[in-house]
Image (tube, rainbow, N blue to C red; front, top):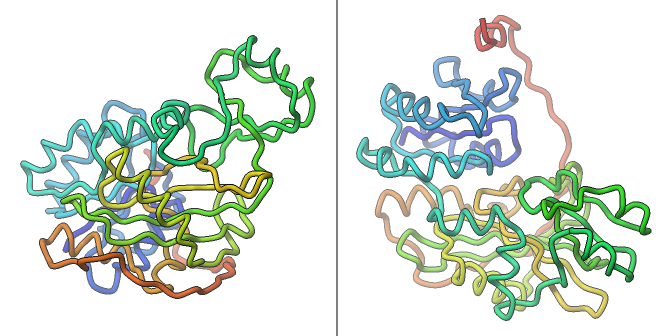
Length: 322
């Protein structure tokens, strides 16, 4: 298959590349000519894209898919999803399968307050409210946690130890003020087929993170988390891949943090545990038979480290804007 991955500079795209590169023709795209994943594929399979919020993103991708005869488009950057989802009919008419959940699911995942409101009563959620002058004045049980209502990769998420820290933040409703959850954090890698059948749910404990990416993690057979993640996926209409994040509260209960409706950056661990989600996706989109029940997996642990990839600087120059 000819497959185009966006977000080549991020761990999600590189994780998918690791699963699929041996068997498929992978093309890599990013807005940054220095994105590492661009240099994992031959020069003619590299593509520079507009920013995810640029209105030309979908037209550029449509033309690239046509010219390169792409069969599967796998976006991995949250800020690209809305534009690509809106153009999904045009991609499908060209014969390009787009690996994204429905627009209604993507919209919920983008707005963390709307997501938690929708899932209240479906799974345990932390107490939370948009940060406004009223909710700030009522806050008293420090520490608390604040994060953008719309964001990705733990950007601008902060622990609030005292009121002066809270008063320094924007109180226009663009951030979410939440109960602080002090326990372990888990991300459940979920795969739901295009027909809506749950195929996999693999909990990972995020033991150590760097810039929002787990660098030390382990898979854990935790039925409570598996069942909760599948309830979430069913309620919001996940298709294909998502990672559903939970953290343990002070009372020991797992509470939902957020849902990322995309491939996570720690996929190689899930694959090593026995569930290779990118390969499941390709089989699903090609109409191949999928497992009839949830796939089993092993408990395994990983630590991650840097590696180097050397190339001629002229390859970078060729991708830079002129």
